[in-house]
Amino acid sequence: MQVSRRKFLTLAGTSAATVTMLSPLEAFYARVARGEMPTTRGYGRLEEKLPLNSAELPAQYRGVPILQLPRGFNYTAFHFTGEQMDDGFTVPQGHDGMAAYPGANKTTILVCNHELGSSANNPVRGDTRYSTGVQGGTSTVVVGADRKPIKHFNSLAGTSRNCAGGPTPWRTWVTCEETFSTSSNTTGTAGTATVRHGYNFEVVADPNSGLVTPVALTAMGRFNHEAIAVDPRTGYVYETEDRGDSSFYRFVPNVRPTKVGDLAQGGTLYALKVRGAENFALNTINNPNFGGQPGLVQVGQKLPVEWVQIDNPDPDQDTVRKEAQEKGAAIFFRGEGAWYGNGLIYFVASQGGPPVSSATNARGNGQVWAYDPAREELTLVVEGSPTGAFLEAPDNITVAPWGDLFLCEDGSGVDYIVGVNGKGEVYQFAMNNLGSSEFAGACFSADGRTMFVNIQSPGITLAIFGPWNRAYRG
Image (cartoon, rainbow, N blue to C red; front, side, top):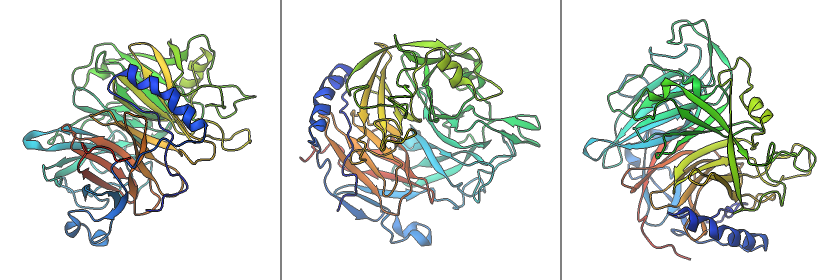
């Protein structure tokens, strides 16, 4: 395969232990700075492949190679936008964030976001709604051991722009509204004519849940949410915000959450601050892109952090990040994906990094940060080059059961799923063979044998499997 303008990502390695992960990063970054590319073929050269269930797909996708994958890997495709579901509705469009949960009899339960606003050709339908004025929400898919769908249905309706979110240790999915808006409502569960959006909602991963009753988790903040990640040791929930001048948040629940509904009992919201640095990463003269003028932060550098409390987490105006930053909170350029793994909270700043031009509003090509809750330290793990040759617009992120990091690109042109192994070597794992639509929602089954991922448009869910334990080929 001829690689695109972006051959590989500048990704720093991860390993099962935090100490071993961070140490090689400095050497890795130094090699990149010298123009070297510590890459590997990973699982091998990518090649076009048909889904194993190609003959069963909607007519327009039969015989179509949806993905390019390494030799030895295969996949099934299902949950296509417009397909009939078991609840009588059709699969909504706008597939985005997703998580996988173990089900009975070797099944997997997927809860999938649909990033939709006030209008959509294929909305999330159903009578149990938060608001009748918007079309987003989630669907749930039960996948059999043969990686084919057994059942699928809508599970949350009437929410807006459900972008990413995150799984919890108590088998729920927290879905996030990437908006700060209102909608007109007539019969929704919010119960008012004008409904506020910009919240998180909890969806149980249950094959028989049907549409859950939507409950806005107002104490977790009203802002342009993107994703969450839960530290299983404390039950604290970490949240990203998709704004050019976003903050990174920690929600401390009033009760340690162990079941659905506990987060609705309230809690306290905080924002991350780099200790001793007011509004770290914001320098309007030398760093207009909010996220990483060369030399500001070195990959592998450890930054001590503290947390400032948000007094008004549910404001009438979009002021949560403004309050945070008035108290010195750090600023990140478009916080996006987040995931817990290797004892760390990983989160993405999709347009952070050295600016791609000299314009005062220039964006970068992306960063991945790691917060260590045990040490209260923040580390820049990944930073893209200004040329875009290494990284462009990382979005959703997940950590494989064996420690590798997988990153979904949402850039211009063809997008890839890119992996990084424990040695700090990066590799392209999958390519969208249909066009330029983003990958989203990458996650692994509980047994680690299957990666599930979405292509947002036209709306497809994929189950990828193969020799994950094969030694990397250099």
